[in-house]
Amino acid sequence: MLLSDLLDAPVHDADGRALGFVVDVRLVLDGPLDGVLAAPRLHGLLVSPRTGSSFLGYERTDENSPALLARWLRHRHRGTFLVLWDDVLPPDETHTPPAPTITLRHDYRRWSPALPQH
Image 1 (cartoon, rainbow, N blue to C red):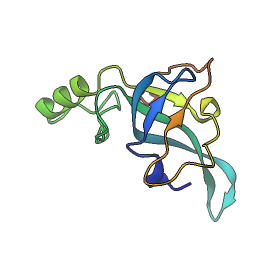
Image 2 (tube, rainbow, N blue to C red; image 1 turned 120 degrees about the horizontal axis):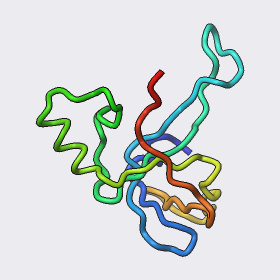
Image 3 (cartoon, helix red, strand yellow; image 1 turned 180 degrees about the vertical axis):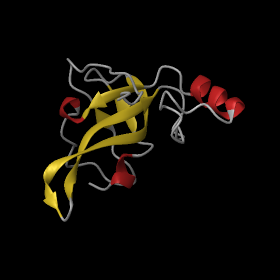
């Protein structure tokens, strides 16, 4: 599966209820060394209940300028959550392109879309 297959894909819970669309992914660099950095691993998906458009980086809690754009994007993406990749059910092998439907496990958990502050 390619990253472009995930972006804008519809997301449903295990009972088939629509939850929104994948607007971004979270990667972590904790895999085996690949040159000087660790290889990336898909950590989770950002799911927006209202739109398939990107956050443009404004989910980061310290990004707030230009203020009008930041405020509009946060309002547009209210209710957005992070779901861990482990909570995504394996894709249906019979699905045909263009985009798969992402289905979450019954016991998935919603996490904050904000990046942790260090």
